[in-house]
Amino acid sequence: MPEVLLEIKNLIINFYTYRGIVKAINGVNLTIKKGEFFGLVGETGCGKSVTASAILNLVQNPGKIERGEILFKGKDILSMNEDEIRDRIRGKEITMIMQHPVAALNPVIKNGHQIAEALSKKMSEGEVKKRVIQLLKEVNIPEPEKIANQYPHQLSGGMAQRVMIAMMLSSKPSLLIADEPTTALDVSIQAQVLRLLKDLIEKHKASVLLITHDLSVVAETCDRVGVMYAGDMVEVGEVDQITNNPKHPYTIGLMRAIPSDYRKELVGIRGSVPDLVNPPPGCRFHPRCDYARDICKEKKPKTIQVESNHTVACFLYEGRKSG
Image 1 (cartoon, rainbow, N blue to C red):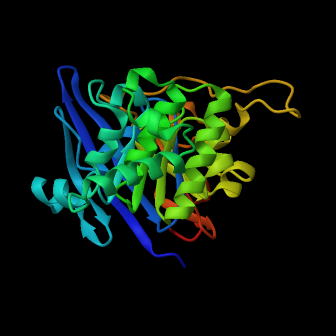
Image 2: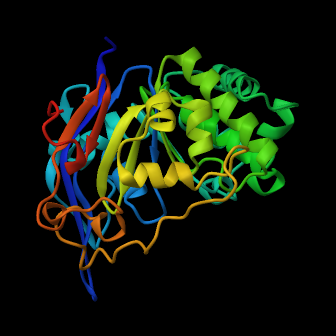
Image 3: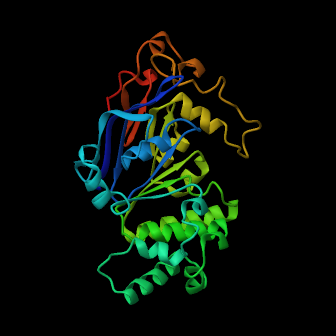
């Protein structure tokens, strides 16, 4: 069995706003193994990006991590001081690719210099230049010397994302967090970037946490997937298990909403996403669930193991082995 790289235990995050306390993350548990491509899916506002920020201990005011552990290589990131996280973890062992690469890059610094900033200070100037060009070649950028000497605004969205990937890989991270990395790209470019990312991660033997709302992207690239709804992790399993045999009513609803050749019409999930200032009691999905029972309105369901490597938080599976 692959060794566990990252483990999140009972993570609770609230945001203290003028409207009230937003209960954004409601006791999330998550495990990512070494060398694994893990997808985290769910609709906008479900807590995917907040969870990613917590991994880097970057939840900002008015947000607060109330409880939980984030174990990276066995050590709790939340117990580290800011200097230790900055010097050892953030941007080194764990790096992050943002949704909008042009906005994430510094507009007044040349691309090559931005990649060079992440390289070891022990390298000579000549070694740094050589390594920058090598990284740009790895991400399939034509004329890497020219691109290195340009500014971010001179790049297309796809090229800027490749520069970001090169920069994030320069520190040889153990975990790469990719937060909607293809959102701003054309469909044809999306596929190229995802394939590139998967190939590079296999080559560098790193793990990836891919955050997306697109289940087709997950099906093409990921090994395992976690499904989030309104701050809860409702189902986790291997990609084939989630796409071919979903268990949670929310996951089933997501799969039915995907266009396909054999389905005559799309079936939407009734109702709307709850307001997390005043979330529903019990299972947060129960107001929209066709299978809801009285207990769903009263208690939060425990995580149940329904088959090997496949867990679900739903009272429909009560009596099965607990995960």
